[in-house]
Image (cartoon, rainbow, N blue to C red; front, side):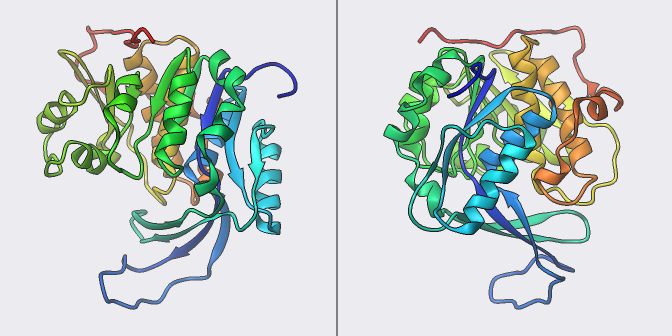
Length: 318
């Protein structure tokens, strides 16, 4: 990789998103009419890398695109955002693709076809060993094969953050290597083989069942819950008008990684991420909605249920 090593390395997916506005999200067996289709850059890895770059963070993306013109455009778009793509491989076939339906309230349903993301194998990740080992934070998701995520975790010497989306069964070896796990309610429930939690207390109880050092559960319009040991912190977001929630979770993960790279305590990092994610839902699209640092800092801080309690990021000895 040319130049200085990045503060944050994102290991994950790159997609071409087809966004369609609908009056209501389709139910099984139902055909509905949608608005004009709009092609946008997406993929959880790419979205999180763009979120970091928009915040001014030095960031590199480890992943893969295809050999088609769509893939070439996605790579150019990432580079234009300031993401280092030296470790973005090109493989035969199409790019990953996602179809995103968005209803008038901003809620979405997404179907993903892996494409080139399925070719992100452990050997590809290991080629970026020096960057992974030198990064302050490594951030991964699950739109690439799990064994590639494990390879990234094994190479990490800083803080390893995993966004377990979409939720799939994870080997205990991987979970034990996670410093900060960032699921939403549904993903948390699937990881714990439980019913989706209805209350903050139920979220905390499920989070404690996981062997990770710390868990930050994104709660949509209810903000986020930080759980580490006996400490539970509920951070409520500032009031905003949601236009499109696509990419909000990715914005949260990127902003969390950004703040952790600066050495902020986990609760403070999560509070910054809550503000960034709240701002992102006010703009349509995923990557297009990622805010700058200046935009985030003008928002009021989220309400903190336990302001007297501060904790550092737990970090297990590897």
